[in-house]
Image: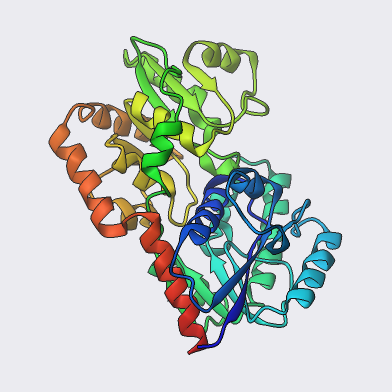
Length: 376
């Protein structure tokens, strides 16, 4: 095989799991010795660049797109100009859509839960009617650009099946998510002495990104219900406080029982997982959440929405709730609480995700082999 130029595009990856996945791919890529015949160039967002800046990358192969092409016409022209200069044999967009119609082969990662799974009810979760309408229109806009790819890669079979109901999907591949990159090195870098949780309370980690479908708006009512059941909790939420508390009464609940600590570095998440008792993620829309495999890997009881995309990942090693029902969330937390010190159950969950999905190096290898297969 002759050398092939690959343009890795993560210019729209700015937060959440797609941000970390993009950084994981680049870090593993530059450390890998399995890149024969593939020459990589990188289109990155400032947020991805922040995560990879300590790694040695040829500056002639790294292009920072300051504004997401999802909102900037100028960025789209900039990306097309860079692509015309590089003339890649293939563009790999980590999480589509790319909002650019590339002339080369285009491998599109499809992990957008709105495009894949969202019902009107789920889009409305945590949104006003106006916000619902804007999100619905934006979803149709994204679906239009998803169609521009020549090849598709999904994180699950169900994702591929759902998109196939909406567009004609050809040349598709399924590569599951994996446990994050360089776990051992991250453990060394983590802030071992920093305490996030209040002592004497049930410590619940809510590893959210700032999307309404994650369910942060239900937390004050849930805390109230827990306290009425004599369960004193401290929730640590990985988003900032702005826009999360709707009234003064909710604000008092926050001060005593909920801490919004903002977005965290991936290395700091290890301490959060290790210090908490439970992990709670009442998101109604996911594709293949890294939180699921991370919570089980760090042996913490996990509470998630009773949806197929979660069941596919965790199987029986989670406690399922209906995020639309506070009482359902309460009951799931009460059940999970009983397993905080159940080492047999927790170690079995870790064994399941480790054997089923492996670490990121295996996922990177699968992606590399997939890219090579396209040229064969």
